[in-house]
Length: 166
Image (cartoon, rainbow, N blue to C red; front, side, top):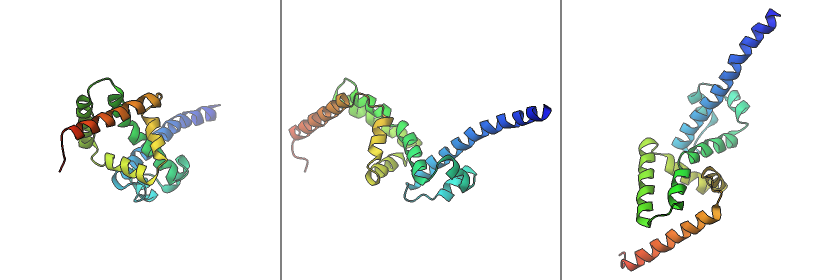
């Protein structure tokens, strides 16, 4: 009976550590992928940053692609919802541009490599665009797409009305 209780006590902290380990791996993967991109990252580098061995990486995330997908989703969720909210809002184009620039500058000050990472990932892995849409929670994709096209058309008209650029 006491042996079962001792095993149960040992099992509970272990379960908590598993969640902590997974989070540490994801934190490390996020940092390394943002800094080096998916192609330039090695699993050993992520393992070293997380303070675990490579076998543990593969236990939680079967392969580099699954880990890269999880890290990209985390990066996108940290930025895209706010941008889409600004773009989808009612308001003047100039106000939206100012607000998106403010968001971008705020993110750049905290994570200078994040925009380059997101652009690079979408460029080299087109399926990541769907992850961006999912992260942005684009439930009403048609409405948002219509607003974005409207903003682009208005911006183009304003540019043309301002005269030659060169």
